[in-house]
Length: 236
Image 1 (cartoon, rainbow, N blue to C red):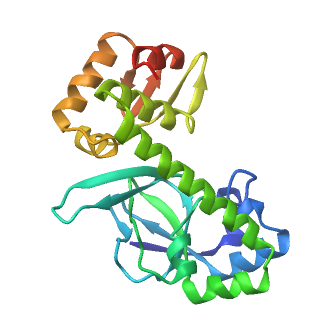
Image 2 (cartoon, rainbow, N blue to C red):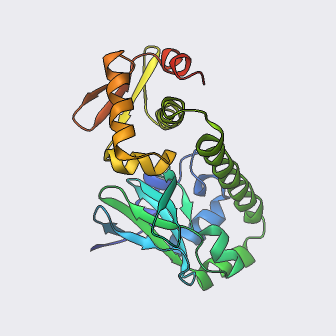
């Protein structure tokens, strides 16, 4: 792990835009929070925190993406979502003091800014207005978790589940005519963890999508030429 010696004041282009959580704080709150954090570079596959570990604090995603998942006692894993640049991870546990309820793992090399629990609680005490933004973010996380459970538990078929997943991810990608393209670094086994399906099922379904020209791959980039066509095929 490489430590990058810079505070968040040197990475404002990563975390302070209007779409990020930090960008919703007041200028004074942003400055205060920036002073508490140091950006660190992590390799792909690094576990930032694991479920049932004592909460150490929050993790601000500056660059890259982080997979959030939960595990069963018999070792099965359900991936819930991929956190993107500008998100704050570990909020619930940091505020409540309970153990982390999720496992957070970098998908590819990422820049993350940890802030200790004591420091973050002190930040909230100094800026009570920030609680509104934090509450909105916790509500958003809850809604995303419900949507993922709806996809896994209520979608009737693997094509429907996978189509929903790809369409959700495409919202963070680059618009291309009627479709979108986005980075897609996951293995078929990892994709299966998002929809509760085997690697073989994912491979078979993706092949069907490609044969019908609903998706295409170029290296690690996935393109959906027509999002409506993919949704119609899977009856989304």
